[in-house]
Image (cartoon, rainbow, N blue to C red; front, side, top):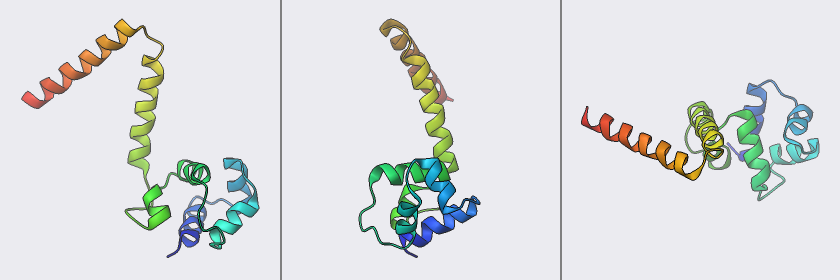
Length: 113
């Protein structure tokens, strides 16, 4: 299966038209059409990232048919880490170091159990 065929499969599995998908990721329908028809040899990383994020698919699967199509667990983990980052970046350096120490202490405690 080609990249275009995988993209089409992922798009249809989510129930999107080419036009709606293009609108959601901020590109033209022509880009989606060209990708699905394998007319673009090297897709722009920005487009690939947007497609994978929006369709919740594994980038390795889309680009190289590696792994599973769906990437829900990775996305959940990335969203959690992003939320942690957004909360912690607002803290002072001293508070950030305290949070880091709490995480390290927690990991040490878990390893002993």
